[in-house]
Image (cartoon, rainbow, N blue to C red; front, side, top):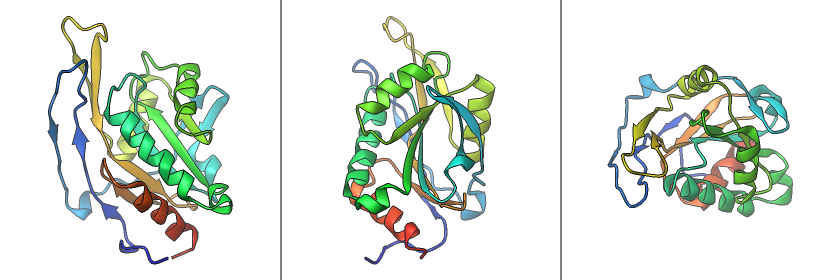
Length: 199
């Protein structure tokens, strides 16, 4: 298998605003200079099974996605692609790959509701949250952007506009690739295999 992307950090940026109850809130894409790539790094948040640190997954490829359970379209699509990507991996590869959802809606997403949510996508998915400050600190490490938008007359109350990229962190904890929303599952799977191969 020959992975089509270069060995350095692939920086593909996307920022999408979710559509809620039929309301299209807009979208914009930005591709910053490589010098502005986020540093990545370790963080600790809470899952339904207790605290989880990114460093707990050393030795594994980790996909990270910042989203939330009430997102009506972008998050389910992105997590669906990621689920398909995991299904394309060999059994041996899958043992060394983790997928982590970080909630950008800590006021409404509890560890328990997050665990139930990601179980619909893939049994190996893990979801975490924390205080608003903890989530913001983790998001800043990866350059993830998000902010609430009030929805007048909506039962949702508010939506959360958020970055829609998927991050890939190497087994030694280095941020290696940033994939835009809509990246095909086979490309995500190939990236994981490529990194696991030591290329």
